[in-house]
Image (cartoon, rainbow, N blue to C red; front, side, top):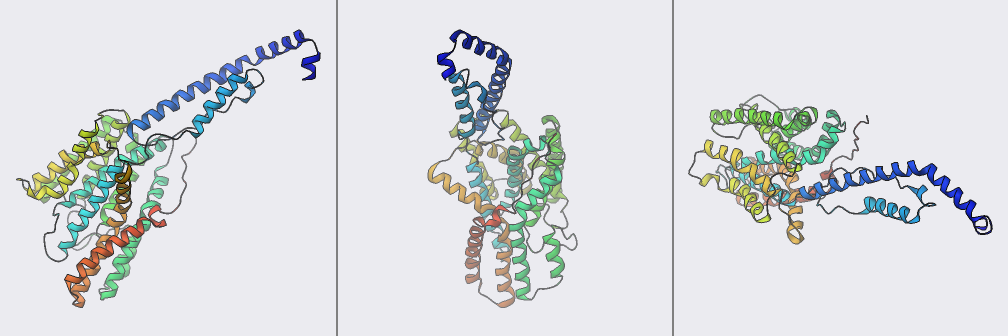
Length: 428
């Protein structure tokens, strides 16, 4: 400061002028780089807000601190811009709440579809097995938003598989162990160790005429979904939209033929048609990927009224299908090919807030634990009735309450978050 005040003002000004000319190219590069990255991040945030998901955010550009001695206002503006990029929260919700709610309601419908069958009746929702196709479609849709960008950055398929296993296996293992404990408790111990170890290893038993997973029947769809996740990371993310759509249509044609052959779309869970699960998951999961890409591109936006109306097609398909003036084959294909895809598309665009958002979040958290454990818990109750003479009027409501209680406990336990893994894409 003494030099500036007591020295030659003209010489000092000339010295700063020469220094500014020397660093001018660096200043220009910094400003152009910061402006380009900021525009890219702004476009990314707009796209995320448009589709209701928080996407991958790149690191903000470095603060150009060397501007401070030459232009305090420019430095202050640049600093403010960088801090805004670092701290401004995204206005987009991180979850698709109505899809969470529908997933939870679908899991409840599946439970009430299975429970009466254990006691010889048709059940309240005899076509709720269509929820599995909705689950597959929803998985492809959500995981495309969450992970396809990371796959493009180099996330390996085997690491993605490990991540999905770490996320889904712990809760599923609880259901398997309950199924094993129930059999042991009532004395049905034939091949119990083999069945338990095979189920924990996700290995199906393809002999006999029963389910391919005898301790936790719904496990079959979880295994097929994990397989679809692996194929997604290995191959499907590489396909163009046109080739992906061709894959989906091929799987759909095979699924339609299988439905005509077996008399219903419910395939993949038992030994006689377990191979039908490949076309079933291939069509729905692949279609979920394709629809997510269309949503990312900003196509087909709907107002909230239309979105709500379309979302109602999910409960309509799951709960009222037996009332349609159609046979099982035609009704199943109508639901899977015509009703569920637009229902998912519409539900993904509905926005919830307040009490409805909190309720949807609870249903979303409950959905997977309830789906994973309801079979073993309900079967345990049926075994008590069959082998120990327990009253079904007492056991059935108690088993349903126990299923909900266990599902909620697991939903808010560390097991619901899976094993903590941090997998990073490889750097090029």
